[in-house]
Amino acid sequence: MKHATLIGIVIAIVLLLGGCAAPAKDVAMEQDVNVIVEQADEADAQMEIISDIEEVEADVASAERLEGGADEGADMVVVIRDFKFQPSAMTIPAGASVEFINMDNAPHTATSDSWDTGTLAKKQSKVIVFDEPGTYEYVCQFHPGMRGQIVVE
Ligand SMILES: [Cu+2]
Image (cartoon, rainbow, N blue to C red; front, side, top):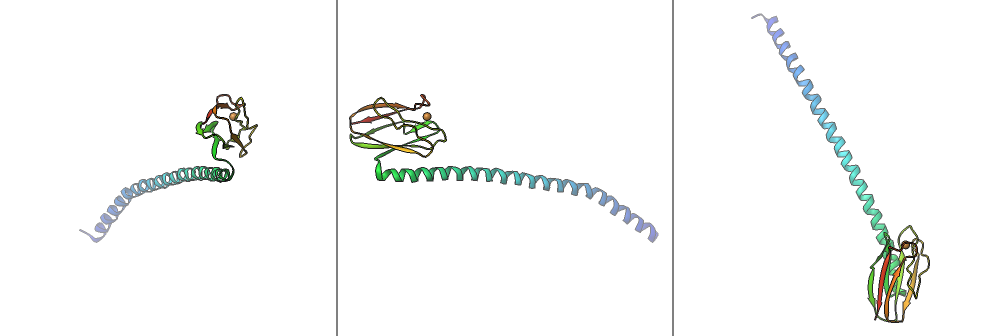
């Protein structure tokens, strides 16, 4: 075999291998890009969850601050959140006070036949003192589906 022929064969093999390897490399790169895009999406989703968690934590922290403030003045706290009185039912001794705190953006009231917080805007609160034993059903004047009960013993 002549030297030139041998070189020709070697070049042909190299070109063949190169031709096969190139698309394989493209596929690999495409997969790499896909993986990177997936990872970026995942990171985005995680960031969203983290910012959601931070929002909830800030909400809880401000509610706790308000509740902490209530400890100085009121015996019990009803937090108004997500159009619900929380807790919606409680039993307290006569003479106890309850602070109603609105944590919703919407205004609410806690209104019974014998007492009323009046309109509470966001983060406003009102303390009601319960001297008379009895069962007090109350509602929000703006949202009659919001109901609560306080039993005074
Ligand atoms: Cu309401």
